[in-house]
Image 1 (tube, each protein chain N blue to C red):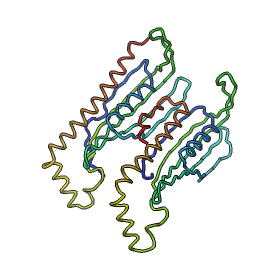
Image 2: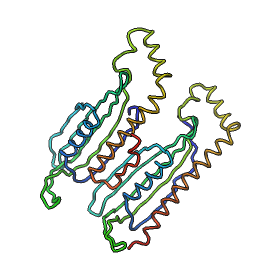
Image 3: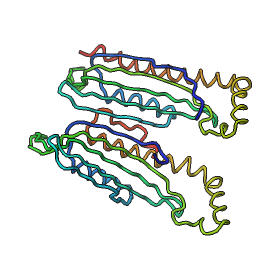
Image 4: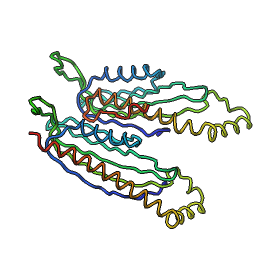
Length: 168
Length: 172
């Protein structure tokens, strides 16, 4: 099992109103793709209900930052009562969605993700000593990099949702 | 789970069952995979609807050593025909709960080149663990992985799911 160091723990954004589900999904996908993350979609559930769609998506893209460590960002989307609405923007009719959106962000650093240092007790011991005392500046660097990446994504998403506040 | 993580879709609503299977089959054929049905099971119709299990195995030879294998598993619960009006015409489609799992494997040494003697096995170990290791990990696993997401994206698009964009498409 790789060592997991949680950096962002269940940061939550809740939004209710107009937004575009597909645009939001695309925005997040593009953000990860541009930063060279690997795609990982754990769950994609869509249930059509009389009061609108219920959508639940779990994504967990990751990026290797060295042979020893990788950054993982987990994002859970929960969307309730999603209906389609038509609005007018610059005299043009645009299709958007309306409903409740909950986003939950987690981010962590995974060290020894290839499990090379845990085959033998001596290796495991050495790894811990190495992580705690010798490699600490690097580990701290990985942590701050992971935190900065997750915060950048959070503000990117917040900015995107803010734009929709002006649509009526 | 195979060499790559599973890609899963869960959907409840209306869809065209025949078109779903045709689309999947054609996608495999277009990507030069050979498709085989591993499992088909249908439970007798209950008042709630039919239950079906379909499992397909698709394989594509890459070179003399490797085969890409993708497995797709459809599970359908409570499937009932319903009439809908689409593009002004009446159509019979299906209303059901659907779960699709796409899984993949790399089949190594399918021709048993490195089998038969201890020396051959040793050579095979050297080849897989050192000589060809980077190609397997960095090229073939990634290609298969993003191929599974390409199919995943196609199916989401077909089901008209909201989150259907695949910006990683170029990586396959």
